[in-house]
Amino acid sequence: MEKTKLDHEIRQKLVEAGLNARKRAYAPYSKYYVGAALLAASGKIYEGANIENASYGATVCAERVAVFNAVSAGERKFIAMSVVGDKGGAPCGMCRQVLAEFGLDILLLEVNKDGKVVREVTVADILPDPFTPANLGIDPSNY
Image (tube, rainbow, N blue to C red; front, side):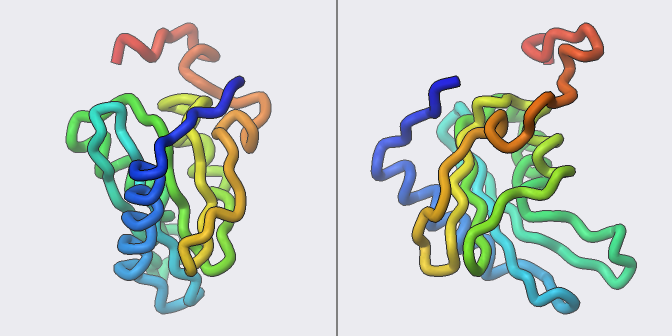
């Protein structure tokens, strides 16, 4: 699968939006602040920050918050996402599964707190043998 190429301006906006979202993370327990920015096919960028909870299972990752914000706004097709943490970092398994729902070709920019892209991969690269709508015999383009 060929990786999506982003022009420099869009790439920079995605990184900056992820850095901005990270500033709003609520992580009083882990102190692990993460921001994410998701580029929809419409050209709009949706941000998300991790939100922890004293009941750890109720915590939500930045990547899922960004996806849920976008889907709530009516978006269904996504091109790329920046994920910003101290040293970069890949989405967790649950976030990988949520992203796979919307496309294995989504480009992921893993970014450190200084705004440097430390790794660039697709959802397919980090989620081998995914469970997708196709496993249920469903064509996701109908949604």
